[in-house]
Image (cartoon, rainbow, N blue to C red):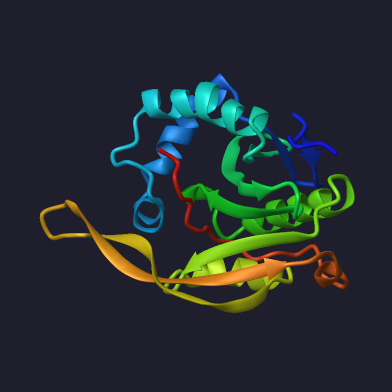
Length: 210
């Protein structure tokens, strides 16, 4: 049984999910410097183009080849513009489970891209990759991300108290760590029955990117 994800692309009517490449460096760096991304993720701030290039050329390929996860660039089908990232991580090949995270660029929010990308990824994992469980973790105050989880059919399993480090911007412009809770969500193959294709939008916390 395989213990690595294939290097593939996945399409919807509006989106193409594909491997990150070096043409994405500038757009990826700009996306990661967004205020809300900074608040809800552990991405270093400011996030440089060198950091984006390292992620694309070193981190993401290593995660895939060593079986830990997979990173998708989420792009518009018509314009090929980078609208976000889907990341699979903490993959357990024996249990056939993985953790799914998502970020959408600020200019692309409100279009349903996060849920559309997450849903097609989940269907691919369950059908083509024979996975049995997908897990999501959302910070307690990240309501946009929670709406995405609910829209794609996830079930809330409970709260990990004080397990999340978010960030708050101080008056002087610096970022301060703020401890909060994680809400844990799961998605099983049967949870996708009846799930529509008109998703909500948002983003969730990414752990251990750097």
